[in-house]
Length: 299
Length: 188
Image (cartoon, rainbow over all chains, first blue to last red; front, side, top):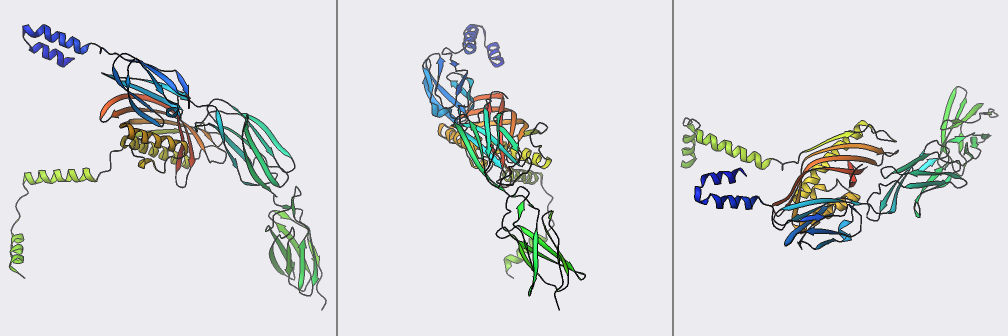
């Protein structure tokens, strides 16, 4: 505005009126004033219609998540935004330019939940462990938008012999989660998260915990002392996995010898040498077993 | 030794002239030009603050918070570069999943329509609101303020300071936290 005033001041009398008229014309609003009329909000994947008032031609821009389009339109006609342009939730900016540019924004909300992203940990868990299993569920719509409106997620866990737990959790900020203890029986643990008809299932391997109540028997043979465990179980009665290490320790005549043996077919075996009387003990992890007294060999 | 070599040696043995002001000016100009050519492209200004006090059920460890802060800032710096240059290159390896999809779609769409977007003077207030028990996903709320400019073939068609709210999901990758979801919302 200041430059217009300066120009007017420099021009002598006769042209002053014309100059003032020119300035007024420049400052006046454009003749083809346009206004955008948008929906307050829309749902992802649904077409909408925008109307632009005014007359003449204009350029319409749409900028939002995943879209940045430009098209020539006739003012006064409706502008149809196809569903394909509105897949992602978020704020969209509509800009209309003819003489000047005007803009307005509208929000696209996520559609109904269509998939559940369900993370469960760990993939392998010892039985009977408190708070050892956790799961997190995120509901997404068909276009992978996180559904932020509160939804009730039903979590259900079932072991090989028992239903472990069933819980309903409301999503908060698009997420629901749980934490629970593992079951008592070894085997597959099926955990399901569901929202209405929508569900996702994950399977964990529930395995035996540390061995419990170790029992050994043994006898002297011509080749040494042969010791073996009874079938090795955890405290819940599940057979421990093959490969679990059992340690046999023989103490006798001031000497100590140790043998680590893996469980194979539920039983661990070892051969110990020594001719004198020995005391044999057994351990696995933090569990101790019985002691075995073997008399010395006959000379 | 030939004649030319001898001549050269004699010339260099002469006393040096004082350094003229004109030569100094051109030397300084050359230095400036060289430093300008060697300097990296101007980085968009991106400030990020992270609040981890409300993260649950797992607390955010300090090293994790530092990593999140650095990776989120780097991701936005490169996002701004990508949409300003209409090239997905700067965002490679920083975004994944839905965030990568819509970002790639935006860049492809901008390239097609001849538009360019600039995010200037970014300031992000990031708040960790959910950190999974096993630490494999984090949800954050970002209240971002920046100057948004949209150009159509060099013509500025939009220039406004904006406040945006983003719901962000980040997951750990091999060497950084990746942005998996970057969803603008009207409010938290």
